[in-house]
Image (tube, rainbow, N blue to C red):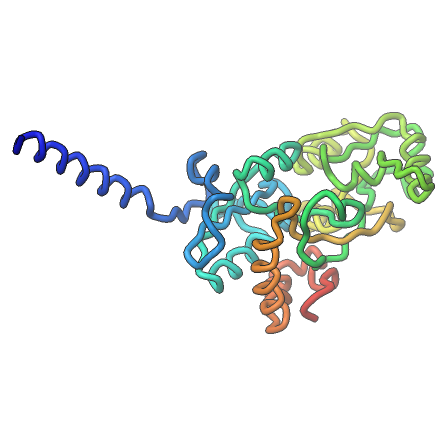
Length: 290
């Protein structure tokens, strides 16, 4: 009996030690599936894990720094500051942009915070207040003969799969509000999709594509990083706003994030972070904290 009791006590002790080890919060930028999968169950109080889903190839909002190898960007820097203020542990979770809704719906991520378009999607998610005004523009090679959207007739144009640029060229709300862009897209020789914009720009430079429909912040990054290779058409396709997307109905978490984000905007922190990305014109694109 004593031997049996001793074995049981040892088992309980080991289980307790394992549980204690397993409760340690991860600070890794690349969480394990187990860490990411508990995002929705982590609770909303101080000490929770806050898992942000983002496209790792979407500068300046989210990308991998070539020098440090860490994930960074305007939105991720804001998420880091927000988590510090709330006492949360930030998990930066790179996602396939086409799978963002599945990741959010499964609880693998708590929000999508990565240049996420609010305009036209108001009913699809529970949103933070918009914080950036963004335009969809056309990028071409510097030596291209394309000068205006009309010159895109018969050309091969590409946009990222699931992007707001692709939506701007393909969405038909049925009220005539997007007829001009639909007519523009119909004039193309072909409108193609690609997984990420880094590849799109490289392939356009190689002659695979004639033009790219892209968010202006991403376009500005490519122009700054590849001086003299690309240029933008003066006339944008459309304008839109960015916000943080939460699962539809998750107002509790949204309200907590919004509260702290408002504090960051009021004390100048959002503008200060945006000034790290002046090459992308981000300070001028802000609609909060100025």
